[in-house]
Image 1 (cartoon, rainbow, N blue to C red):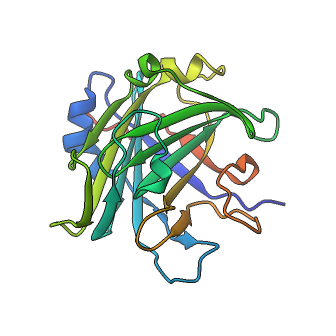
Image 2: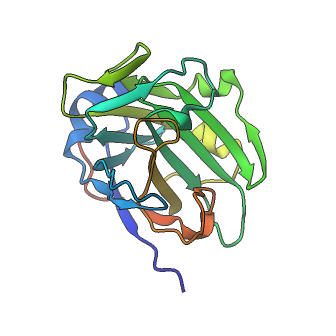
Image 3: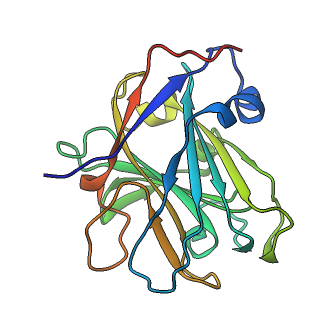
Length: 223
């Protein structure tokens, strides 16, 4: 039996804009932590915190990565950002009944790759679809080396309308997800996961190990 991790998502006032949430509310959400690093023996394990909130329109996700030295070279949408210093959110409705899932991968300068489908049969989202996702990154230009701060951040607001275009989702219902920190071509190659997976080789595309997201109807954060 799979021991799934769980995370309770608080609701924000529906009138709150993504800018409001990014600047004010996400920092107050309880973090889940990506601290399970697999497959590598280099002992590189940057602490990565993930905070989630939701409103009627959006699922908000904020990554805070305590990593001083980064690689961020890809600037075009749907380029292989997993090779850079990268964070990822994978979302599924019912992994035990439906093998389809989303993967959103974002490097340290906010370049995103997004796809949907089954493992091995995935469709990249169009640029028009991806443009509906609101993304904030403190870093914006290609960069390799040490950053001035102790951490870097990515914040994104994914419209529920975009998710529901691909599978039937009711706002406020349970979902399943996993969150990752990686860097295939960084100085220290690494693979971090939130909800543990079992695999002999690096593989994030295992929805059977996704954790559970529980959308709360109480605990509303006001605008």
